[in-house]
Image (cartoon, rainbow, N blue to C red; front, side, top):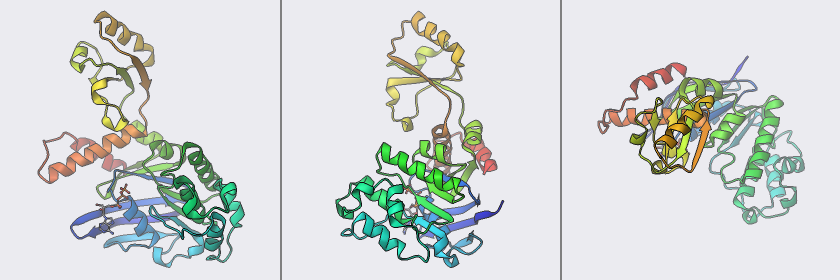
Length: 329
Ligand SMILES: Nc1ncnc2c1ncn2[C@@H]1O[C@H](COP(=O)(O)OP(=O)(O)OP(=O)(O)O)[C@@H](O)[C@H]1O
């Protein structure tokens, strides 16, 4: 297979801020590569360095076999995170306008249909909803039928049905051989669309792999979540590890405990334990580890490392985890 995106040791500073600190990645032809990571990790800067809109301080980047600034724009599609097209053009006019910039564009009406906006074709951009606007922007990155497509948070602000339209579109593009690099904060999106996922933290890729491999290597064990006001200390005699849920999962840590590593067949023993000790609970739910667990674990580990490096840490325990993650990358 041919590497369509090939970046080695990219570094980029903005004054004192280190946006990229040795980011390397390679994306093969026809792959969908998902880039995930916390706010400020460097995802947009990496996309900008790979698409020729910013120059890295050091390191090398090649896309479609050329330097990003030299690549034939007819072969490249880019949806930036911030994109504000002229407000007083209709959705159809905007797509026609962008189509006119290329030698052999797609029919704008087909693109309008692809992004699910046929009925809103005559509406001015400024009168579209936020999600519809984003869909027009996605369409504008597709009008030249690119071989390589960068989508920086394509579905932000799009409702669940619209998100599925965009997901289907990306799947169809990938099936036709388009190489896609996608940044997202939506772990379900990364897990569903990406052949491989790279986790960027603190300016470098700390782990890369298929979603399955990342979950296997870094996702930890299964979670049995018990909605209860009881303190984890009440579970001291339970034979499984017990912890508070991570706040990244949108739960108040005081309203639940998580029991790790319980086989589904053994859930009954945990229920017996709760009942024998009169521990009140409202709900039990069991889940396999997923990409969100990987994200929370590795992003948290990197943050602890960074804080320790800056001398403000509490001696966190993530060193060995990060070393392991580095080996994966
Ligand atoms: N043009 C710029 N000038 C100064 N600092 C910048 C610039 N662009 C990015 N940065 C800084 O570089 C770091 C990385 O930013 P970047 O936008 O690449 O992160 P990100 O991972 O895309 O974040 P988010 O998930 O919030 O979009 C941040 O600290 C940001 O403030």
